[in-house]
Figure 1 (cartoon, rainbow, N blue to C red):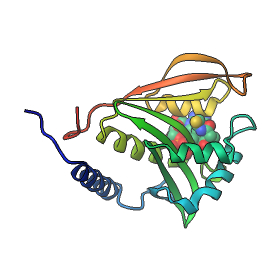
Figure 2 (figure 1 turned 180 degrees about the vertical axis):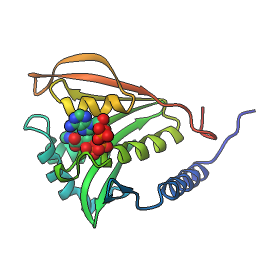
Figure 3 (figure 1 turned 135 degrees about the horizontal axis):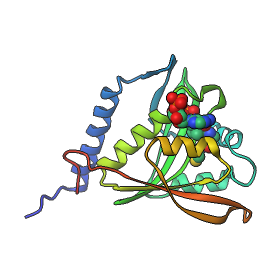
Figure 4 (figure 1 turned 60 degrees about the horizontal axis):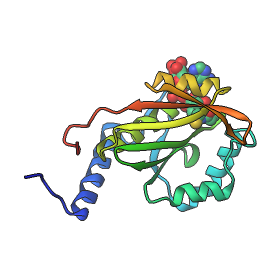
Length: 188
Ligand SMILES: CC(C)(COP(=O)(O)OP(=O)(O)OC[C@H]1O[C@@H](n2cnc3c(N)ncnc32)[C@H](O)[C@@H]1OP(=O)(O)O)[C@@H](O)C(=O)NCCC(=O)NCCS
């Protein structure tokens, strides 16, 4: 007989898991001299996240406020923010429907790049997704985004396909994919 948990129990397990991740990361990881705290998105973060996304991506790829709100409101949405001294310096937004998840965006402020902030956000996001039964993560990045492609390849994502005219009907994207290995004790 398969083990069954109530949804309340599953929520409890997920919360415990988050605490464990935080402890494992030491609460405030110091990454290459940058002290960054990672926590779940809170509604008052919205304006800073929108501003950061506009700064990170060119017009046509950056999200409008409406699109960003739409993604955050999805049932399977998860958004983690990285803070340095209370200021949002990065965020990752994903949508999950186990065993699949889709990374919608990863944004790190220019001032904080190459300090491991993106790596920390992806690490925590993937740990959460893996624990909730996600086995494959998909994402898209512009074929011209050399930094983004290098970053994702460094983290084990592989180019799967070229999506012609994906952004604004004129800029191609790579679809990239990574298989996640099941976490011990997580659902199969
Ligand atoms: C891509 C991005 C998220 C990387 O964030 P970051 O915090 O600077 O990344 P990290 O410091 O964790 O980098 C980890 C590794 O990724 C690779 N990498 C990151 N930026 C790179 C760049 N500009 N050129 C080449 N490799 C890069 C490197 O291997 C790096 O390790 P290293 O610094 O030891 O060489 C950030 O540049 C960004 O926000 N860009 C604009 C938005 C974007 O393109 N998002 C991704 C597409 S959705």
